[in-house]
Image (tube, rainbow over all chains, first blue to last red):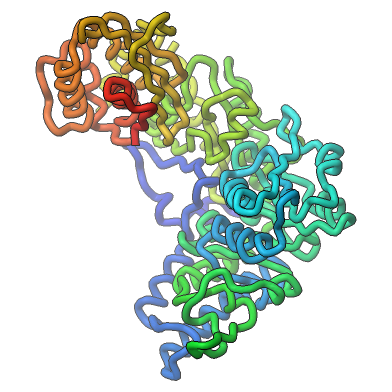
Length: 403
Length: 144
């Protein structure tokens, strides 16, 4: 994997910020887009722009072919079937879809939904809403100080009342990689379906939904080097077939009269209205790009980066790492004694270093560690070791400024 | 725009040693302010006597800008009545958001550099929004 060559694929990386080369370490928030993705968007709007699934004219056929072609590419990327790939706006909408169309109809007072202590708000709030509406209870599986799920305790929370287990594959705030296959086996042994939030995983791990054995898997395109506003909910055919639509409109019907509507089969049943056609095509180009590089090479490169960055940052006096699980991906979260993360973020920006500072939409995680916020450096395939030096230099500058 | 124009010595000093930090025994007005952007919280308490601020104190964890802003604000508001407080709020807001540069703000003028850091304006104004909420009987404020 030649990083210098790969970087040339990303136009947005070729810029200076405050007269310094941009060092982009905010990949957990969103990744930059390779030219092949930008070109796919541009080509669609310039040459093929049309609505899908309706017109008999040539452009409409091209648009439909590209849109459904993207679905097939993403299915292959995830080791799934194309008819199990539902296009949504992002992981958040995918989780809301399952909460509304799968869980709600079977959730009753006294039932439970199990999540974990390390979830992003997107994998908390939709379940909270479903529980509030039905009188069900939201339970939370605990984690250790290192940020690893306590599997024995999680297992005891899988009870006959549990209607769904929803958990993240990779924690956006801590970087922890959860043992999804093992946990899914525990849940399935009790007949409990499992939804996985894969927003932080698919770009850093080789994910095969069948091997994981889960029931639903949600992801966001923009964190996967694709466009914003497009994401995927993968669901087992058996589940999707049995689910009623959650939004009504065009494109999701078989026939409509004023008396009755027959719905299209999945995945179209869950794609009411004109979809984000260009976004889907762009995401198709992104996964093709990643498959071309090879996920295994990306995983190895990012692991080396994370190890080097962890060692370098941990060596700075006053640094406390937040999230020290054995299995981690991409995310280095930390606080520095006496300096608020927000101030560190401003100082780093002046050095051209982009990191995320804040609660990372994971306030319960911040509360668990007793910090209001953390600094989060997160790595992508185009980062390289030399970028760790200016990161650490800027951190020391921040420390000096506020000493 | 250099970092030292944002983080002026006065701001760094008030961040290191905030004034009026703590809780009042008999507050007449109070409010809690939130900055949803960074999760920071600020509790502000005031004791008004004869319509003027007699005592004021704040608690909470925040960044250097919000801590220094709360510290300098609590110093500046002592002895003022509600009308004067509203007037000072308007002047500070104008300074922070860059609409104008009031020249009679004294030490509060140290926040003149914040307008070049749009993402940090809310840090500087959190204490002031909380003050307004406390005076006007609202339970809480956000800097949004």
